[in-house]
Length: 329
Ligand code: ADE
Ligand code: ZN
Image (cartoon, rainbow, N blue to C red):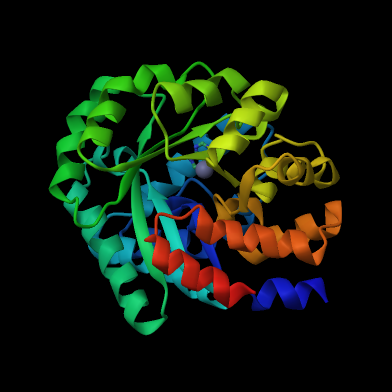
C-alpha cells in the first residue's frame, strides 16, 4: 500500500551527487572503454568494499571511482543512467550536484564535465520529461583558494549551473572557511547550499546559515542537537535535504529505526528525502522512502508532506512549484 503510494507520487530529488550514481558495472565498463585498470578484481570485489564506518571511508572509494570518467560521452552516460533510474522512481524534477575539482584536479577540463552532463539532462528533459538544475560543489577539504580559482569556470557556464554547494570531508572544515567564494557567488545571483550537520556539529549548520547565507541545508541532521537553532530553521522555512540510506551507511544513525525524520517533521522543518550517492548506499530515491517508511512507520500524510516538500524546497519558480504540489494531492 505504502509502496504503491511512494512509487506513484511524482517527486523531486534535491540531493544527489552525480558521481555517486556511478554503479560498479558502469565503472568497469568505462574503465575498459578508457583503457584504465581498476585496482579491484571484479564488480563483486568492489561492492564488497562498500561497507563504511564514516564519511571519509566512503569518500576515499568515491574519489577513486571517478578516475574512469574521462570524456564528454562518459559524463553523458553517467548522467543518463541516473536519469533512467530517476524516471522509474517517478522523479519529475532533479537538482543534482557535481564535484568539478574531482575532475579538474586530474586534468579533465571543466568544459568536458559540464557539457557532457548538460547534454544528458537536456535530452532527458525532452525525452523523459524530467526538468533539472545543476549545482557545482566545492570540495571543502581543499583550500578556499582552490575554489576561488575554479569559480570563473562556473561563472562561464552560468547558463547551465544554478548554484554552488559545499561537500566532502566535513569535520575540521567548517563553513566559515568558505565565506569569500560563497559571498561572491551570492552577489553573482547563484543559489547557495552546503552540506552541514552530517558529521559536523550543530554549529556548522549555524555557520552555513549565518556566514554562507545558504538557500538550503544539505543533511542538517545535527541541528536537532540545538533546540533554538532548530526553531529558527523551522521558522525561516529553510529546507533540509535529508538522505536516510546515506545516514545509515555512513553511520550518522546506527539503525534506520533511529532516524530522526519524524522528529524533524514534528518540529516543523521542511525536510525532503533524497538518495545522496545511490550507487554506494544501496538505493535510489524510492528505496529511501520505502525503507525509511517501513523503519519508522511513516503514515500517508507524512509521505505526502515529504513529497510536497521536495517541490517546495526546490529552486523552481513559485508557479511551477505550485503546479507540481497540486499534482501530488
Ligand atoms: N560527497 C558525496 N557524497 C557526500 C556526502 N554524503 N557528504 C559529503 N560529501 C559528499
Ligand atoms: Zn551529499
